[in-house]
Length: 137
Ligand SMILES: [Zn+2]
Figure (cartoon, rainbow, N blue to C red):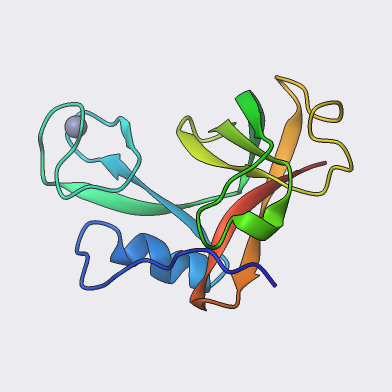
């Protein structure tokens, strides 16, 4: 099982996000004042500074905006992964997140920009919080 670093709490901006991941939900915020999506989670809207933010649950589907294949990573928790794809995924709810693409045999050949993907939650040996990753659909 993967062994990625875990979030450290207390972390007021992202704790609700991580509790969502643990419950199988990809949570994001929208601003009650300017109505823009706010992701990654913060205490204040990254567009207008308002503290009136509402949590929502994404369907977890989107497209690959761009990606890169990491062929070797010596950081503990990544050493054993072999070649893997790091990607920006544009969710259908209009936010972009940095993530990994999984479930492809050859990351340099089997991933394309614009490809549809869906979130899944990768359990970790390192702790109770899974990591949200995306798989082509
Ligand atoms: Zn705002």
